[in-house]
Image (cartoon, rainbow, N blue to C red):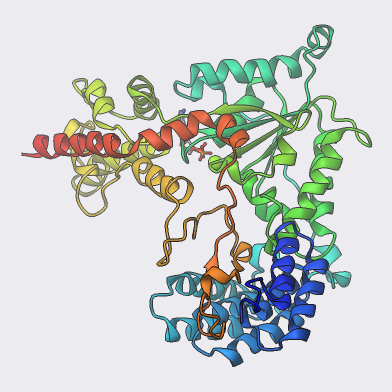
Length: 523
Ligand SMILES: Nc1ncnc2c1ncn2[C@@H]1O[C@H](COP(=O)(O)OP(=O)(O)O)[C@@H](O)[C@H]1O
Ligand SMILES: [Mg+2]
């Protein structure tokens, strides 16, 4: 019964809901304590087992969690969510076979439960990557619990490659004039004129985040910046750092900073920063928690000095970067890399056409107009694909000819067409970020990238079961009202968010027009 005779919530439900309250603020011990009390009063509360299982999972007490999920499934064998969750727990235990089995079952009981399909794919990939002799995310081999590092863990630390002085320069980077100027201010001048800069309070140090859609030149310009100030360049990806052996992630990060300190002046560049320093919520990324703590230690400059080191990071998903890293003194500066405008597209095309035989009458301006939605990386690919056509002909026939407009038309149509990648990117991010999708009950917010699965709380408020019928039959999940992206982030990334919001309909129309233009020229 949800209510007692006085119309009040029964004691076990009070305990359950108290447990939920503690769960929501991350006090999992207290949550478990209250779920225990509820279950003492009534041992058939499915939601309570479910949530206690989630709380145990958050505490990484996976065996206990599985016991609770077993109980849930015993009480209701038709709950896809329960199999799915049990699968996730097995996945955290790195038992991918079991995890896949659970996802299969989830799909069996509810074919519409597509989350399980997606997750099954993830588990299969992890399994395959381990079978191939690799490690998942640099992680521990199967059966090895994170933290059980042992001797083999210590031997696998990453050695970082130092590029003494990259040849790449700003002149090799088309357009992006404003960005180059900012980089001069934030990175180049402070590194090349440390004394003068210091006198004016412009010390090198702290960090810069480059953010924007994929393929817009973030990685490219980071390298060119090092070339520009004759500094060493160390580029680091998540897979270089992240290691599930306890301690290795921290050691890798520390070594990265130490390598930079030994190679001053130096740009220490973290590519795909969100993969290294993702938000700390969510227990499945405990390696990231460790990475972030280490970042804070290395960047705060109490124990270490980072004189002469510029730290930069790049990301397509800045909202996924832990907020602690953005506070002052750490990654405090932000530079937005927008998609290229027409002029920049022209310049990029020119750069990649420069050393190739090109028709004098190639209308680069028109090409620039027609390539709305192409990222710089797409444009480079388009030029490559266009150049391939006369090159292949020349190999076959021995006759050389220049690259012409037709080659571009052909490269941008047909099966292997190089098409613009940005519209789809905006679309997918908008969907994840802005349009919170609704589940069947009309609950908002399911599936957004900012909601980890474990934020789902089974709600036991009496409104869900007004007749007091056994709660085991109607499990309804209440999404926590967790903001997908908070005000501060909205402000910080407003340039990107504005683009994401604006690019859709109009953007697709323009792109379609660009395509039909190509089509028209094809005739
Ligand atoms: N502004 C630019 N000028 C010339 N080439 C560019 C430019 N931006 C990107 N590219 C090309 O696109 C490729 C991918 O860009 P990248 O820097 O990796 O993008 P991001 O890091 O933003 O995803 C680069 O290696 C470079 O060849
Ligand atoms: Mg990149």
